[in-house]
Length: 111
Image: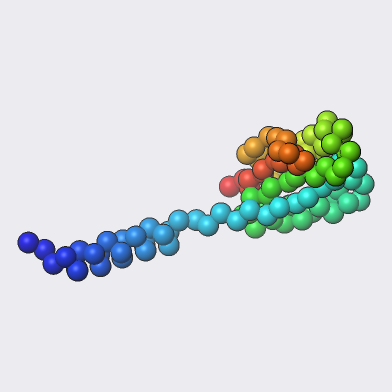
């Protein structure tokens, strides 16, 4: 026979240890437009590099307002160029995917 309260206490203690050891995944988001300028692109790129160096995942999305949804391929080109610039700092976890009015891509840091 065992002490039931002691058993519950030990189980809670084990669960706490497991929870403490798991790594917290931080996801930072960067929004771009389909007609982004070169300077703005580079500014967002520097932020993404800092996030990846800190160990956070970066979720990059292109938001299409109004009729700009016509330029889907423009948005995809921007995201692929963004991924190409970040090739030294992270790898693409999810390729560009259109979800409603947003095209989303996720980049995870290199170990």
